[in-house]
Amino acid sequence: MEAAPINAQRFPLQTPCRATGSCADCKSPDTICCQFLITRFSRHKDRIKVILVDESLGF
Image 1: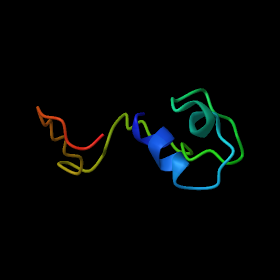
Image 2: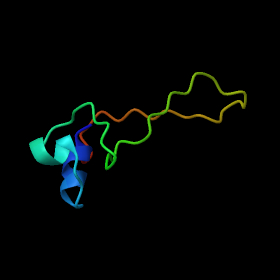
Image 3: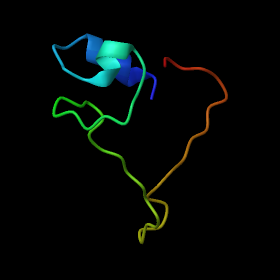
């Protein structure tokens, strides 16, 4: 969650992360952290691929 405070600075939003520069449990109507996804299972074989990268890429 390092990208949210930086992205919030780009827009005229009223979020805790824009004000403080770090993530919080944001329930603001302006939040940019709107969706979290947890996938428990996929019925379609080989549909989900996980790629692990052992280096810093961006945020």
